[in-house]
Amino acid sequence: MASLSEMWIGQVYEIVRLARERKLIADSDFFEALAHDFRLLRVPMEKHEIAQDRSLMASVPMSRTPAREGDVDYRYDKKDPLRAHVMPTGISQRGSMQWLAIDISAALSQRWIERRDLSDRVLQLLRA
Image 1 (tube, rainbow, N blue to C red):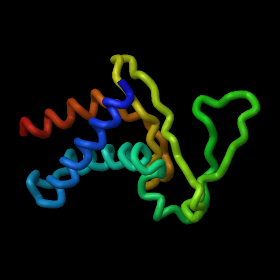
Image 2: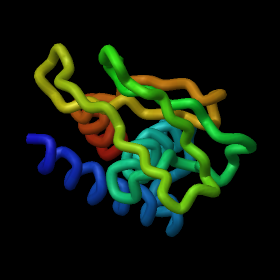
Image 3: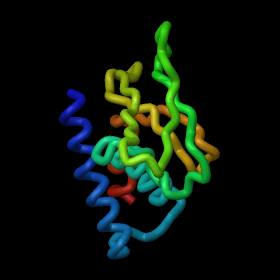
Image 4: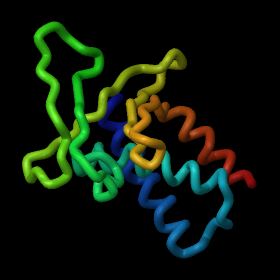
């Protein structure tokens, strides 16, 4: 289930990116928010980096989610060639894959993004 969902994210991200680049879909706050959520997921999934990490001014303290006894916190530094970020995953109450994304543009906030919600939003966009 996880592999198929991650493949779906990567493929739909490319469709959204192309539609945005070629202006195939009219710009709107709804479309921009959707594109942003796909970017927040695609970069960590395919590059193992935090999306938009170029804008980080300092290293970011990280910890395992959920935390376990004896865990050692580490720092994510965009200058470290060995840096890596693996997003926490889970199953939503609706039975869909979800990922805990870090949003640098929102003051390093974290939020769960559900695959089914993204799918619903893509369908809503296509119906418009």
